[in-house]
Image (cartoon, rainbow, N blue to C red):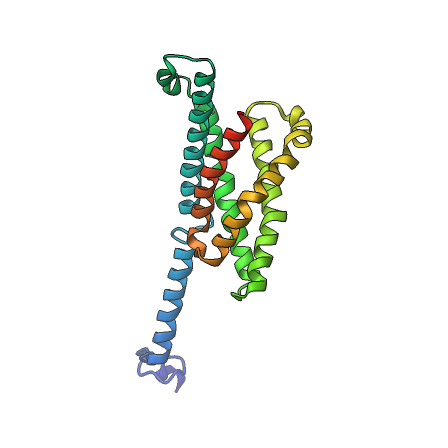
Length: 222
C-alpha cells in the first residue's frame, strides 16, 4: 500500500498537493518580515552590521565642525596680525589632511561606536522613566565621554606618527577637556535621551559636536 501511496503520506500515485497554509501562519510570517524590515531600518541601513547612515552622518558633521574650527582659528590669527589678505588665507591655508583625519574618525569610529553605545543603553534601560534618563546621562558622561576623548587623541597622534607623545597628550589635555565638556554635553545628553529617537541620536550628537568644536577652538585660541 505504501507503493500506491507514494511513501505513505496519503497522496495518490506519488502526487501530494501541499495544503494551504492557515491564515494565522501566513500572518505570522508577514509580521516577522515587517519586524525584520523595521529592525533593518532602525539599524540605519539595509540590515548590514555596519550602520552606514549613522557613519556618513557623523563623518560629514565632524568635517563641518573641523572646518568651522579651522576657519575660526585662522580668522583670529589674521585679526591678531592685522593681515589685509585674511579672507584669502581663510581658504588657501586650509589643512586638508587634518580634515581627512577628523572625517575618517567620525565615519569609522565615532558614528558606528556611538550608535552601538546608544543601542546598548536603550536595550539595557528600555523604560522611559526619570531614573533611567538620569542613569543614561550619567553613563554617557563617565563611559562614552572619556572613551571618545581617548580615541580621538589616539587617532590624531596615530595619523601624525606621534604615538610616543600620546601619554603626555593624555596627561596634559584629556582631563581638562573632559571637565570642560561636562558643562556642554550634560544638557545636550539630557535632550538627546529625552526627546531624540534612537535613529537620530548619532546625528544629533554630531550636530552638537559642531558647536562643541567651535567653542573649544575659540577658547583655546584666546
